[in-house]
Image (cartoon, rainbow over all chains, first blue to last red; front, top):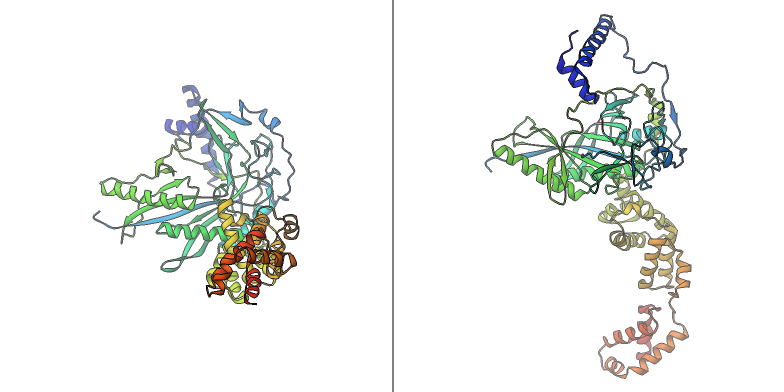
Length: 95
Length: 479
C-alpha cells in the first residue's frame, strides 16, 4: 500500500517525532508493509465472529476501594526533569 | 435583529466519584493534599505498571446510570484516548469510547412550562487528569498529579436544552441525584462536578442544528448562566454580520464576562482511540444490576412528598429540606429524636441555612453536626431551660463544633432562672427603681411593662425567659 508523505508527516507529528528525509522514506515502506499485512487479514471471513477486545479470557478483575499507597512524593519526583514547589516543572503550557 | 434565534444546548458533565481511592491504583482521592503526595507509579504513568480497576467505580457508575434511566452496557470495556499533554503522564487517558457503561437515558426537569425530559446520550467511566499551575514568574508550568487517576463519570446529554434556566435545572437535578445516591459530592467550587457547554443557535423554526462551540471553565451556576448568555449573543452577532460560527473550544473568563478560543490540546485533534489492552473487559450481570437497583435510595421527589404527608410540612419547606440529602437526613433524625418536626424544620431552614450562607460557601451538604444535639437543644428550649436568644447562640456552636448543648449551657451559664428567688428579687428591685414606668402602667399605659422587662433582662444578663419575666412583673403590678 502506498503511504503518502502527508500521512507520514501527520503520524510523526502526532507521535511528536522529528523525522529526517531518510527516516521518512524508510517509515513509508515499513508502514506500507504493515497496512498490506492488515489488509491480508481482511481477506478472512469473519462473519459471525465476535470482535475480540482482549486476548485473555478474563473479565471483572477488580481491586477493593482501600488506600494502599502511602505518600512518597520524593520518590515520585525523582523522575521529574525539574522540580518546583513540590511539582513537576515543565515548559509553559496553556489550556 | 431581523430574525429570532433559538439557543440549543447540550452538556458534558464530569463528576468525580466519591471513592476512597483512585480508579486504577490504591492512591487516596482526598481533595487538597500537598502536591504529588497521592501519587504512585501507576498514576504517574511509569512504564511496566498495571492498572487494576476499582470495583466501587463500577458500582457507583452503575448506580448513576440506573438512576438516570440509562440502558446498561453489560459487556463494557475501557479504551485509550491518546493525547500528549503534561496533565496526563501516560500520554493517554483511560476512558470509554466504544462501549460506555450507560446509554439512552433521560431525566425530567421542572421548567416554567412544566416538566421536560432531557435525554442522556451516554455515561462513561474515565480517569481525571492532573492539575497544571502556571507560574507567571519564571514562565513554567508546575504539574500536580494528585487528581490524576481520580475516577470520573462523564454524563453526555442530548442537545435538548434551550435556555440557561433549563441548563441549571438539569445540573441541579444531576447534582441532587448523584448526592442522594452518595456517588459524588458534586461540589462545583472544588471541581468535583464540571460542566462543558455545547451551544449553537439557529433561527426559530429551523430544523437543522447550527455549528456549535464547546465552552469550558465555568465554576458556578451563575458563571454558567452568564457564559450561555454571552455565547448566544456572540454567535447571533457572527451570523447577523454574515459570517459563520467556527466549531471550536472556548474558555470562559468569568471576570471579563467573555470567552476566547482555546489553543487545541494538539494541533491535530486526533485521539486515536483503541481498546486498552491492560484492562480486561467488565461484565455486569443481571444480578449486579438488580442488586444495584434494589439499593437505590429514596430520591428527592418521593422524599419531599413523604415529608409533606408524614410531618405535615408545607411543600415549600419540604422542597427546601430535601434539596440536599444531608439536610433531609439531619431533619429526619432531629425530628425523630425530638418528636418536634416543625421545630426541627425551622431550626434547619432558618438558623442552619443562615449559618451555611454566612460561614460556609452556601453548600448545605457540608453541614456536619449530630442531630441528637439539635434535638436536645429543641427539648431544652421547650422545657424553658434556655431562652430563644441563648438557644441561637448554642446552635451556632453546635453548627460549628458540634458541641453538646447541656455542657455548653452549663459552661457558659446560659440557663435561665425561672421564677427563682433571684429573679423575683431582681424584678422587685427594677420595680422599685422605676416608679415612673410603674405609674404609667397603673395609669393604663400597658406598654410600659416592656421597659421593665427590658431592664430585668439586662440585670439578668439575658439569662431569663422574657415571657416569664413579663408575667411575673404584671402579676406584681396588678396586685
